[in-house]
Amino acid sequence: MTPATINITAAERVGDYVLRLSFDDDTQQTIDFNPFLSLSRHPDIRVYLEPARFAAFRIEYGELVWGDYDLCFPIADLYHNKLMPDAALEKAA
Image (cartoon, rainbow, N blue to C red; front, side):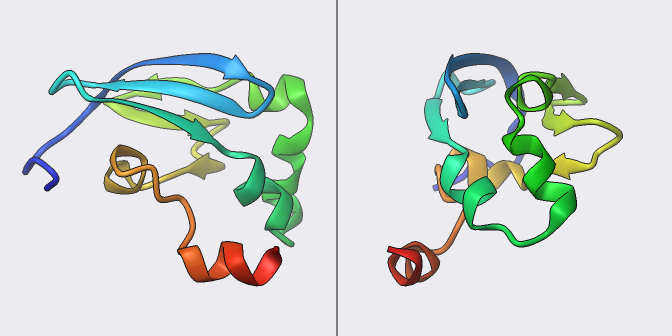
């Protein structure tokens, strides 16, 4: 169950495209963004496959963002570590 309000309090890069996120209810998630980035066909998303660009994330107002909100995700999806539906991942496999 997702709390009514949730914020990201910390983000640490622990792999090429992997971040460990901490939330304000003491929950942590380790999220691999590589499948999302690699499977995307949109060039504005694929630019974040460049390691330095991916590493330039920040937390702003409790959200994880890149650039001028060029790349951001719903907090509930990050909280549950569900960037993509399982069907999309299975189809790509």
